[in-house]
Length: 131
Image 1 (tube, rainbow, N blue to C red):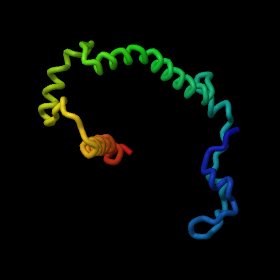
Image 2 (image 1 turned 120 degrees about the vertical axis):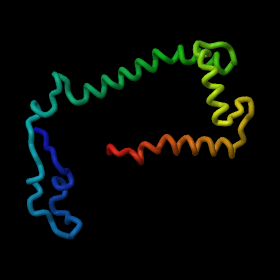
Image 3 (image 1 turned 180 degrees about the horizontal axis):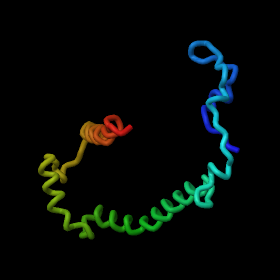
Image 4 (image 1 turned 135 degrees about the vertical axis):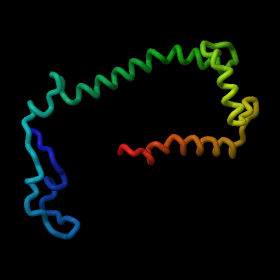
């Protein structure tokens, strides 16, 4: 059997709520369902699916490690790579953002760039209308 509901009410029957009152019927918020009906998903237990997902992600990461490593090596050495056809698009983006790709950055410029990037990355998290 599995107990579904508010574990606070189940474990702390004598603990007062916010108003200082003890809940009179904590068990009315709990629902008991049989294990065979609640946790069986196509013959797999609840732990098997996340385990398979983790194994799949790990296998994909291992399979992509060598090709991505070779690609990054070519990029950092300045040699021709498979994605060089995107160079005109990259140059236009640099020109639009007023970025000099040959110039270095000091720590203040780096901090500003990372802060801006993080702000834009977190914007959908805080402004998402679907939560």
